[in-house]
Image (cartoon, rainbow, N blue to C red; front, top):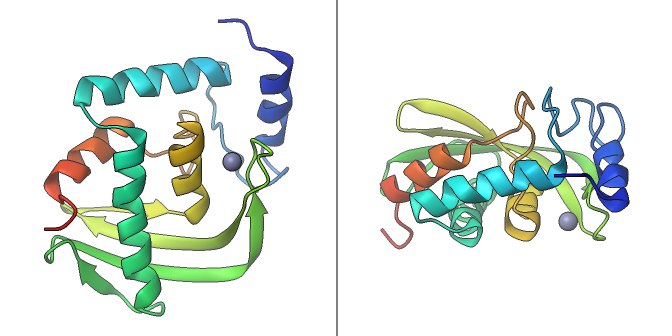
Amino acid sequence: MKANPKNIRTRNRMSPGRLSLAGFLGDDPRTLDDIVEADLATLEAEGVSCEQIADFLDHLHEAADSALEAPTSTCSGKATVQLTETMGRIPCPFACGVRAHKAVIQVTIDGETLQLTPLQIHLIREHSFFQGRGSVFRLEPAHLAQLCRLCPLGD
Ligand SMILES: [Zn+2]
């Protein structure tokens, strides 16, 4: 798909050193539309929506937030989460006006550790954007769908 001018501006904001040191795209050469489209197709095959993923990640974020930077267990003991807060906020690279708190949540779940940020949750919920391949903060939609099934909300 050909990139539209708005997406080119957004892609520029996602470059390393603009809004975040590492940027949002890794070494992914695809257009934003192509990245989003491929990830949405993966989620559709998994039968999970961006909203369900974001609800699940919000749950992990809230559990970590309420533990005041100490490690805490959630999802019936299936996940351990710990939040580290840093000063300030980071604007959404889609320029939608949201400025997310800077924090990193270490999530240990199913024998693996992943890093989660409040901005990532926003990007997934509002922009269906899981970041480019090779990005430090990319979360694989298929992996997230698997974790969602492992830890159903309300469990
Ligand atoms: Zn946004």
